[in-house]
Length: 56
Image 1: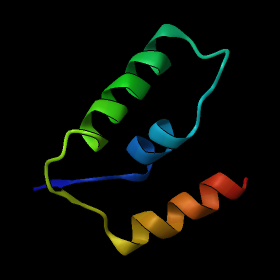
Image 2: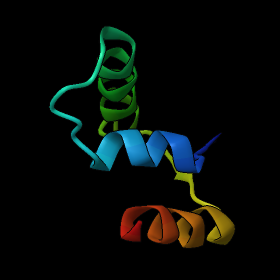
Image 3: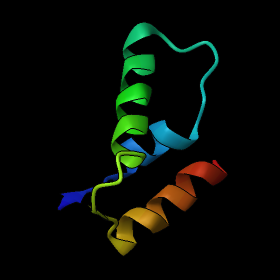
């Protein structure tokens, strides 16, 4: 089972329109992982940190 971190989820949820090529590549990789259908582990601390990141 793959464990998710805040960075992966932030890339998945936040669309930075003026992002550079590396950021776009990371966003695509995050999208492929999250939408792959395989089991993923989301620790509570990551969910809480993501909520904090999305507020700021």
